[in-house]
Image (cartoon, rainbow, N blue to C red):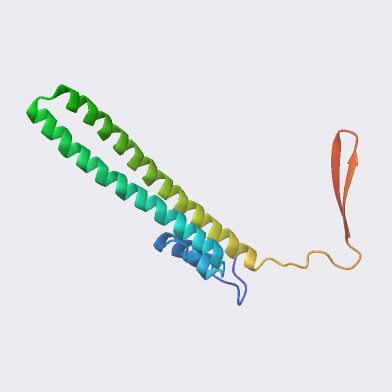
Length: 141
């Protein structure tokens, strides 16, 4: 389907969302959403970096306890290494999910920008009618 003249290119906000957090939302003029996505992605990336730092520290201490032969220290820091690695990976996957959600949201918002708002013309009627065990939605034109 070809875009009409003056209709925005829907791939631009999709691309911008992948380039920087909230970029597609800014392109669509959704500044509050852009802020929410930027904060969300920033927090998740910060969490991944922080857990990676903790993981590296725990690996260094684990190596120290292995060289010292301290079995208690080895067991404790093997647990920390596993925990921090798992947490870091979870933050990374959540970041990927947030970026995909942001890109999808920007793409859908872009599609709705050109959506015609005047669906109902004079004389059109939309009615929701309850009946036994069902609800009927009727559109008359």
